Length: 216
Image (cartoon, rainbow, N blue to C red; front, top):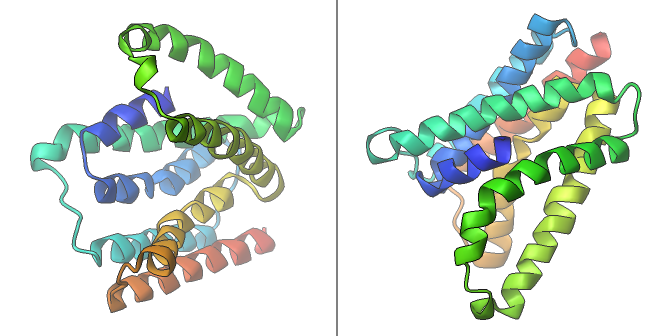
């Protein structure tokens, strides 16, 4: 469900809005964990989560691209729903990881998610002109399936199992920071002073959650 909502949301909003709204996921993870009694969240962890989100706001807002609402409102709401779904997904995986390995949980989630996703996608698959697909397109699809999905999920579940839901979710806020650095190194993208400060704030937030985890 998360992936489907995220894709529809991404198609109806801009990447900057999507990145900012997905950065709320650690907040929902902490709330769900607290409500369900799955994971305790102390003040340091909460401070780290809030600080990390503030850093993301600076990293993304520093590029002057964020524009919530208006013509992108539908997409923005879908992305926010996706963030909440991803948080629920992460929180629900913790009990499973006490009994099964990250690889087994990944396999179970892939099977459970693929079946309904394929059923929903049948009309689009039938309309697709497969002859127009290029080798690079198939390569990108293969890379996405193997590394972004399978390997990515195994790493994610391993982290949830070892360091907990909230801390793992906060680490995901490094994504815009890493993307910005890669863009600067490979594409010559310019990083503003506010974005650099934001990156430092994200790292500070992650360090706070780490200290909070150690105190627990």
